[in-house]
Length: 222
Length: 222
Picture 1 (cartoon, rainbow over the protein chains, first blue to last red):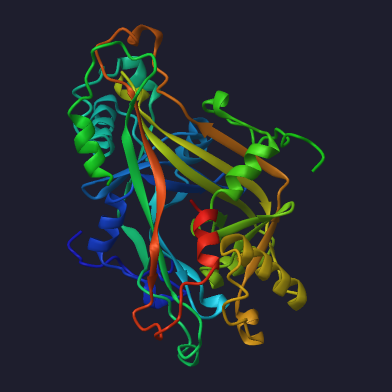
Picture 2: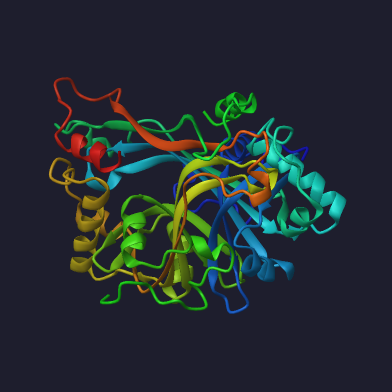
């Protein structure tokens, strides 16, 4: 990806609120990296769309998506169906002076492309390892490694990061010029995701300390 | 909706992790009510799927969805296209004893159906008011009311709550029987959305106090 910005295509062009579009790869990559949750959209053979919540990780120039909700997703995607992967972080409730200028501050990215199911065993092992490290950095070494059977059962998709768009809404409300004189409070209430302290499994064996990776993982997502 | 549970259909049946399915309307309604962000999935005439982040509100037996990303969405949906609206709340990172049993605790709902764009002016005014009250309770009375032009520009969709499924993952990790003896820490780190204090618009006129609705709205989403 030598270009600094994603190409503006029929898919990536923002129709509504085009001033919120940010096509730079840096922004797109940052939003994808700052989030673990995505929604994978695809349609089945009957044209029924689905948006499946799942986990993603950006590794190099590929977006990897965990193949949860497996059978239906895989049936649809095995045939090379088009997908859209959307990642959204909400940052604030925005209180405008007028009712219909209220909104939500958020950052979102939509990635368009064809998903490939990674089948080849050694490639799949590598992909699952890299994916896991992105979400749970440092944890792989502490936990029991997957068996061949577990590897076989896992599913992971790859979508090249080629067509994507970002939309960023931030800052104070955008009111109509003639509304700024109104006696109406305006501002923002921020939204933040906060992680709790580690809670051990109630049946955890005695004497097992909280492992090192948890500090790193909490930092990663804080 | 006299039934206690949503019908199990080809769409709503969970293939993967069926023990996490919860078809009760009470659960489905609770998850929809506890969240403001949804992803609206649809396909355009060329079969390209989209997942658009937007706001929703459950009002009675209808799901209302704000028509952001307006033109493309509206073109696709005006023709009566099928949609899927997905709402997902993440509640925790789950650390299992084995690598591939790591997961995320979350609650999600998928609603399937046909979306109607609400066009009739008085119905649209009513729908926008009810929708706004769900997201920003008490705020409508404080802010400037919409003009006819603003009402005309706004778009809101209605999807009857008829076909839906919920999936709930919570609690400690689910490990393989033979892994519980391992010397590996297992547990959960909770994820919570936290709202900040109200931050006034930097150009807010002097002497305007923080309004009553903000307390209610912060409680609504805390």
